[in-house]
Image (cartoon, rainbow, N blue to C red):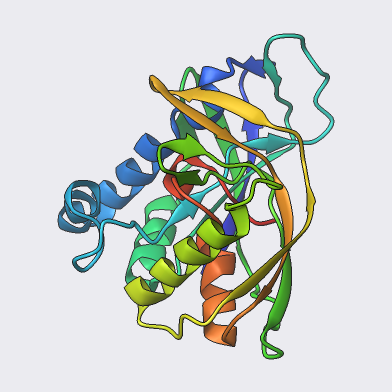
Length: 229
């Protein structure tokens, strides 16, 4: 399940450190308000014996924002998406937003104007084209990978198979990069993240494609990376 929050920012811009920096704290805060034990489990050890956390959030994305040099422009027309392929986690996040009027995002306050559950596209063919709105983060031997690097598709397939194993789903996956955005670098709470947005063709079991749509692509989806449009 994934859902969209329609939001309005209380200031004209975010510092670049606050584009992805607050995301992890926002997610754990929402979970903790409903199920402290679940929040602590995911934070400390991951999900059911795996270090991965099957949940994702997007950075706030605003339309009609006037570009500002050195800052991330906001507006009164924004969205934040949150999702998880695990019903318990998704339900907890959705319940945490019921009746909530504001979301603290770094130094900004986002007024929540509405919450809408999004329908999952039909993946019954076993094929899907996914395009991300935030950079996909992948690493190999300590180095960040970008689309076009020799090991990029291989490591993305490895990540998707790992996610399939976490969820108990078939792990036969094929990936083809169709297009990619420019290299982007973010400092997220003192940790460097390097990646690029990407458009992919993925062949996999329909249930795994559904799960990827809710979870996102690549690493650190809980920090807002790899969110699928």
